[in-house]
Image 1 (cartoon, rainbow, N blue to C red):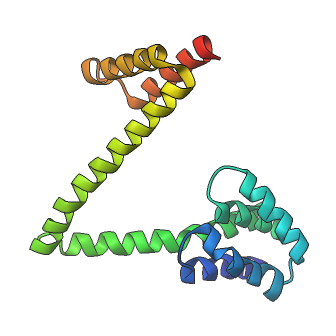
Image 2: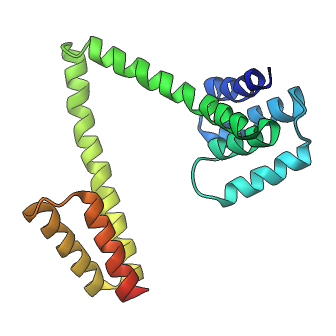
Length: 176
């Protein structure tokens, strides 16, 4: 029964919450502290503080921690699963709709508008990374890494993961 309670405690806030992790924290607190009483408000606040200090989405970190505290490793798995299931269901539903209406002129127009937006967002990301590289490593090292990455990807068709590992190795050896 505890696994069902854990699932519901994290599924319900994530299915009805809108706005990402920080927006659903009060809903999770209402379940964990108010409804089930697995911890008090002070303990929840401490977990929230710890979760905010770590990278990755806050809701999954909190689900893993609370689930583990309540029911061990199985509880952590159930709570994290309940946290990601709403997004998974919505994505599957959206993909199903897109697939069903893939020949529709409206869907085709929509996908024609989405591609340039994604390209612009990716270009912004590249500019941001380049600016961070300049600030952290300097112009010469940034240009060396960029040129080597472009050469490896375009000329030698290297796998992107290998290019990332190579850039990390270069940074670790020469900049670290």
